[in-house]
Image (cartoon, rainbow, N blue to C red; front, side, top):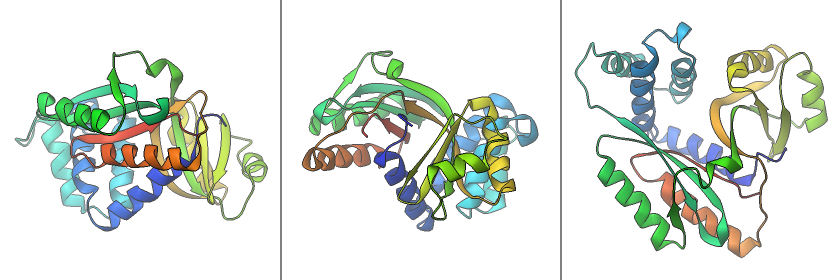
Length: 238
């Protein structure tokens, strides 16, 4: 599958480590708030909210925190107003990058993002200059349990999926965004352990680099991920 890479797996493992330290709570609360603001506080009718609530529960976020974040989004409780922004650009060695942010101060956010790009050998670009290289996809990550891509594909034949890629025993199952919930439940129904389900920017094609070049790019991507206002970082690195 062209759209998944070592970076996708690194991100997934990093998110699990951040969850253990509670570091991911702030990002999840922001995402719950904005999802509730845009689509309402009822997860049964708000797919985006449902997905992020599942992530919050997987990270062991207390239910009270989830409820407060929803109420702040719907206006039942007073809270900070967050604005979504997406930035596009090129990292070291020409890697295409999409950065999703949620912030209460857009000037601060774009300044921080631009600083990382310029400091670490990349440059921000105009909107649309990179996003055409990616597709919005639903991605369900499961523990491969030693199964091959073909074996997982066979298990998922009854569900409308696009492809499967296994990296480091994590299988990424891609699908149309509207089918994300169905594919997630389908994976669970055939005995696969779901570790994450998200809507992601998936690259149509990936580029390969030498190991030293890769390391430089990974450091750049992780520096972006570590910014407080950054929710997600996507790249077309193989």
